[in-house]
Image (cartoon, rainbow, N blue to C red; front, side, top):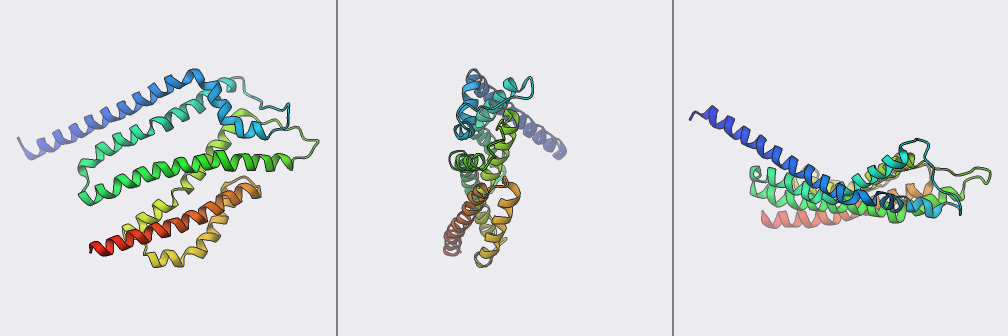
Length: 246
């Protein structure tokens, strides 16, 4: 067998393996969704609870689109199913790329993937349990008495999903810092010098990506600053370990 034939067989086998792992991931996601779909209205009620709890008595959310009462709970349920199945999906990705990695890359990749997943969940939980109740209460408290509050469920879904993404990604800050130090892209000394600039940058980012209220902006900027400090602390331990190894 020629070298080109071996390369083609290897390429095809990789494609087949990739297809199988994608299909397994889709199947697990579909099964999770099927297992949850009968509870879609209840899942949406939990999803909407931060706003419903902040609304005045007797006020509820509305649907301006005919199909929104059906599709919005379905979208929320699919999102929950994706979060539940994400560990399996990440494991499939890891199993596919792991044979091609060097031993040092394997030691680095798995902790990065796991910590990124857990920190993203932590960011979402922080947004749901801390930011949403405080921000919604603050916004509604400052609403004029003549204005009737009626939030559309589809707009609420889009708003909450964007904040989930923002807070989930912001909680990845320590992982990014450790990677930069571990891969020698940025020295620990430069990161410490950058601290005051990052504080200003955190408040600028919070002002741009969060709603125009002080509460949600502070609740993104302050955790970003604390996460940056945590990243510096963890990067120091990484730098010390690498020095001992060398």
